[in-house]
Picture 1 (cartoon, rainbow, N blue to C red):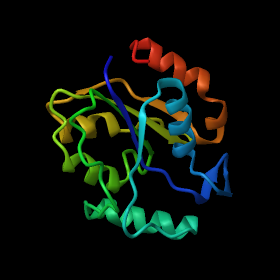
Picture 2 (cartoon, rainbow, N blue to C red):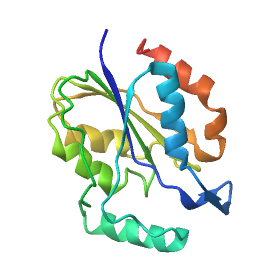
Picture 3 (cartoon, helix red, strand yellow):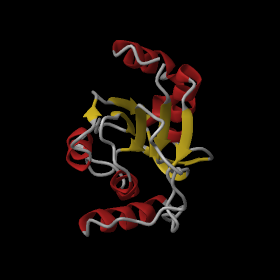
Picture 4 (cartoon, helix red, strand yellow):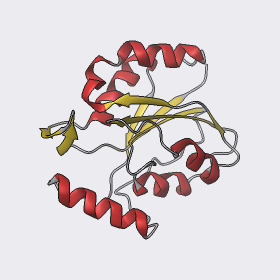
Amino acid sequence: MSKKLIAFYSRADENYVSGALKHLTIGNTEVAAGILQELTGADLFHIEQIQPYAKDYNTCIAQAQADQKRNARPELKVYPQSIEEYDIIYLGFPNYWNTMPMAVFTFLEHFDFSGKTILPFCTHEGSGMGNSERDIRKLCPKATVGKGLPIYGSAVGRAANEMKKWILGGKRV
């Protein structure tokens, strides 16, 4: 039986949900990661920046977009000691301008994913996976990157069946 890790980036606070700004105490991707943990028993790791983005949505998106435009690699608070023991890495993130938040790029560039299977999932409000699967393949060319699962953030609490089908589609439970 292979060992699994769920590494995810998530943002609580003010978020865009179903066409309106709402305050979330737990970010949508963290909710999805929790559901995935219940379904798989995988270990959890929260990817967090040392300098988090603002709690205000509009300020946050300006900061995140500026990071993306300059191809920044925000410093992370901590990393797993190693990913050596994991065969499968579920990688979760919100879709930021058609890809992953830059902190996820930082995480992926920190480790050698050779021989690992990366299964991406993202939360979004209409943009799906964007170019994130392609970007992961570029960053981790010696990993196998599976088909991603886009999850509407506004429906994340009802996504367990969809997630189960995704996992079972590749017989990864």
